[in-house]
Image (cartoon, rainbow over all chains, first blue to last red; front, side, top):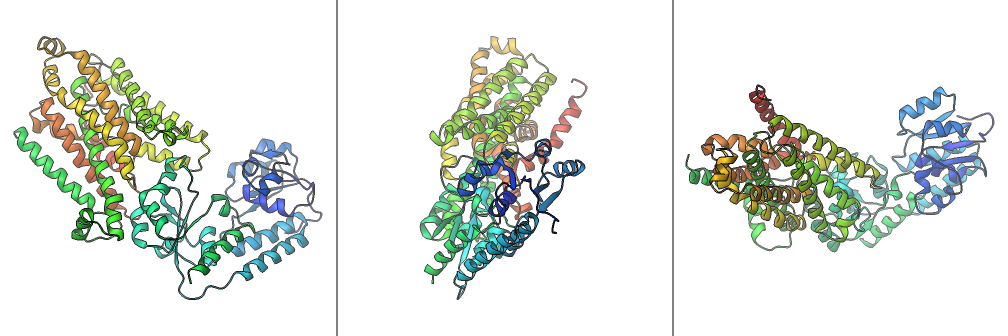
Length: 256
Length: 328
């Protein structure tokens, strides 16, 4: 949907629309992003800290007097209804679950912000990087995504798609869990994957992450190549997910 | 039934359920292969699965079940109140709060034993406060009301601590601490909890004679040489150590201490001393059975242990309340 004139005061209240908008917006066009992104690390968060932060609460959003609010489909529905009642224009983005969703979201953001040319350029760069990843040949090695609480993402999720794009077969998909699910340690041990992609190892600060230090996972780390996938690597569908795809594809190349 | 025959039967049941727990799991290992992988060394995944996943799981279920059964029987004997149970009266919930604080402050990561120690402190505070509020002279109603308040407060504070934490897994953690689970625990957890659980049980088991005497009333028990203050101290420390350490590694598991003594009391001739040992064995058997059931009923789903024990235990609780309603 194209607006007559580009919006001048855009407020993003979702971590992922924050990043899409930051990459495309004209100087001064984006007036606030979420505090969640500001607390993050990296270049995007650095840029986010230059702007006022918000916590996605209706009251503070309204007081920013935006002419466009960018939200995610998991933004609290009561907040969205309240903003609608207050007469604000809201655009809701569905989180990317595939690499082509990322392209679509970038193009849509470009249209909404009146920055079509910038969006086209970003998508072209994205396509070029994706095309440069060597096509997988031969049988795909098995990769196990393993996160807190033994959760393993499936092929209908962005991390699953990223692993598959790098030329791996996915453990959760083989187990018939398209959206992922809890994979017991026993199953992980007997599946003998060729690559273990674990969430942040570090000292477990929560009981949920203890499982990543379990002797079974530790033994698997000793036996097969291991990669680390931080939550921030896949939570949002931005071109930076290709960093991970390229890294995993390089591991795939060494397995030939 | 003589105590010896009862102990033998319950012991045999526990061993059988322990083996059943060891041979149940998502990795389809034939039973002979599974058991041989446990005792012989090999590089295959079978040894890994048996020694690092199923053995600690079965050991924790047995130890925690025994400590809960024993604590329930001892508290019921001391308070002469059939509703006394570590889960129901908030001891487990307070232990969970202690454990959550230890984990979220990073104390547990710095000193491994800070985890059981914090849970133990939580359990000790709750047990002491409950005995003070609803000691032997208090009514069943006082105990339950105090317990409900403790459980609710501890659960709320646990949720608060987890909500304030930066961990994105807070919601899942809250479920774990309130419902409990021994899935995917390791030998590290066994080593952390077992010393405290065994020490706690060793404090409670010798209380049998005193509890027998107490069935005649406090004055009679005192005249028979029972030192009530020492008994009370041993009970508080024993329950706090065993329930606290168990909760620290497996979350709050309810109803075991209620169901087991209730089922076994008629078989023990209503003698508290016999009931103590029988409840320890019966608790181990019940929790092993419940944990095996979590893997058989919904093998694809991560069913929580406390859900199964609550489904078994709640009807017993209602039955007891129904029987006691005239006196409450």
